[in-house]
Image (cartoon, rainbow, N blue to C red; front, side, top):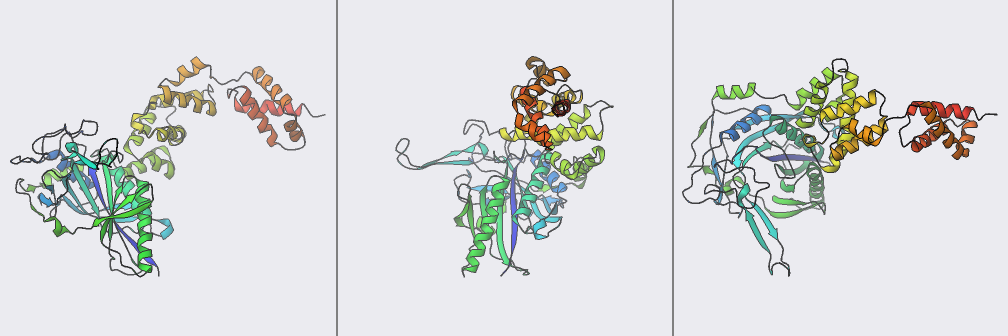
Length: 497
């Protein structure tokens, strides 16, 4: 029997506000000593009263507008009760039946293998809540402790957390990955979150089920947690879909439960039975007033929305004649797009043309991206500035550097922060265009490689390129490649009887 996959995603986004959701404690907890960003409110002490962070509400409404959601005029906060040790109060202040945004959508490109074209994925709701404390678990060890134990760091507790809940419209792990990457890009472009998955600023839970192909009845779903990268989301969903298929085909029944993804083993494991909404005993938060969201306020935020990735991609394609692939790569994050446009804006009017912009794009997408990925570094922290990259490209354009030499110089710029002209001058890396110097290297290469010479003379013209490579080696990559090839061919022709 063929089965259809049904996936819905719950994405938690930490909002980039200065203070926490319901108190004045700083929200920059990542590098702080444990339990130093706390107060009576986020510690859950009796009598402490919360106050709503206006900026967090604005960020959530902005996200809702970007997702084409309805923004209700009336909303409220609720208490979500559950007895986990990472909740200081024994409950979380969240939103249940009246969120800040609802009934929107996010466009994805679809899954070509499954013949799902570009289409909107429904967004059920976008609501606002507070994050919980961070638990660290330590196993028993003879050196440290006789028994296992856990520690709680309250610094994260109370940080504004926006939850974006999709409808069960996704039909494959690949579609889920596309949805997540598009959403990740959106929150960065909006400036509402850094979206750093390594720091937990962008987290995802998935609800997964299967059903017979053609059926419109949902199967029993499982929730999958502990996925901390786009890759792990994709792999966890692939595994879980296959696990459920095996369970059904073996005559078993899929159980509604929460499962955790174990990345190093490539499996999901059962953690607990899945709660229902009534298990949380939601009721209106008595310490916070309801919110009336004025239409004029919403209209002002709608008019102030920044240019998002799809619009920026279309604009860059039109202005600089970029391919769809290049425009995709350059707009995958706001910082990459900003870097590209900063570099192009620095070009003189005589050089600001599509071919020059394409060259900037090529170096950014290729060599510069490689160096950044090796360091797991965002381009916003790149040691090579947009002006520095343009200086390097200028040395290629005026013949000072060959492309291969420029790659070497870029690596040194990235490692040291020193400009390209200084590196070239101090290390004597300028391209050699002196015919006499190159002829000397050509003679050496021909004398050292008689077989290549014989191959060329017998009709194998590729041997000339091999000898050109030897010339480049002898000159440490500094010979002008076109001139070197011409002189190699001339030297070989001179060998003919």
